[in-house]
Image 1: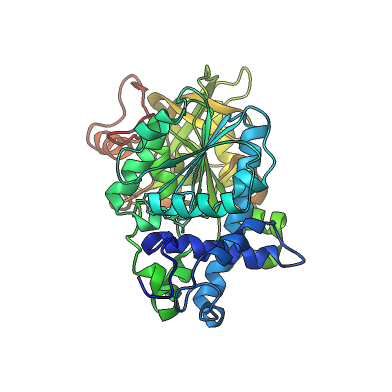
Image 2: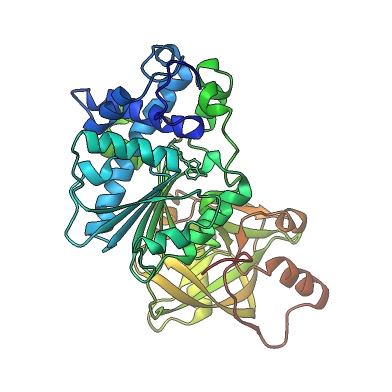
Length: 450
Ligand SMILES: C[S@@+](CC[C@H](N)C(=O)[O-])C[C@H]1O[C@@H](n2cnc3c(N)ncnc32)[C@H](O)[C@@H]1O
């Protein structure tokens, strides 16, 4: 500690919360502010300035800080809205701010009756924050509990001791924390959140890659060294896919949607968020569907890329849901013509049946019962303008795969065992009767809570 630092001012990783408060204080002073956080300036005034730190002028000249603070402002505005929706529309009755730092949402947002809010952070941070709030006679607008905990350890026990009820749906906040954790600590924290999440619980995170450029700039900028030297990398896995494989439905909030909501000039390129929800137990409607395994003369297979909240990105054979009373082969062919413009596909016998789960935007969770037929067609791109058909069916792109390329695909395949099924088909020819693969669960990871 240097001489000019108040002994009560958080040091080390706690200091980073003052950087966030600085960005919020600057935003709150703008006439076109996205939020008003009067407590941010209060915390800054109470903290001893660190050399080059927030408010000393050093950051004002930093390009990395300009980008980072724009992100912090957007993140604050988005997470404010996320919490408002979670406790009003989505019915969450508990809110947990993990690594709350100088977050003043308990004091500055409107909360419905009956909501309980928990804040967790390291002892030094909690002591500083509570002292400043008490001196300002600040009153929370929600039932608020403060818990000291190191989030690399078992924080569930002190959270429960403070009155947290895992049977109630919870809105979780993990804002500005993961980057300061090692991968295994970040994964353990997210797993613990899953284990404490009743159906209907929610979690918001920054989308991977949102900050790639900003972080690269920051790493090279001495003015940002106070924070960057503390970075440990966080989960180091695709957050959306990790969450899906641990029992969450994950919706991706992209740049365009944020621009419409907060103003184009407030959203940097590539910025986005993840909104994850713990699904409510529902009886999934049965959806009959049929598809074509279209092979070209060299044995390449034609696939389309889809994306949904339960599975994430996945490659699918052409085809889809059947209309009432429609025969499966006729339905598979009709859908394939709509999706490819090919009218000369030659169809063969039924090869495989399977059942699987996914999330349809218009219906929610469904269980699809699918039959797959052999088919052949020349190797070519889809014909005609299929923009409307792609949009209606949620097709992101399509392409042919050689057997070798298919074996290297990293996204989910439908069915997941497509590579080995194709090997069997090449070796043995079509089965006399369609092979019933039964119910095939979506990929889950060991230790998942779903
Ligand atoms: C960048 S600040 C973000 C604070 C707050 N979430 C916000 O966005 O305003 C990082 C916070 O993580 C807290 N933190 C870092 N490592 C922690 C740990 N192992 N346990 C508890 N809190 C931790 C720090 O004390 C600090 O308050």
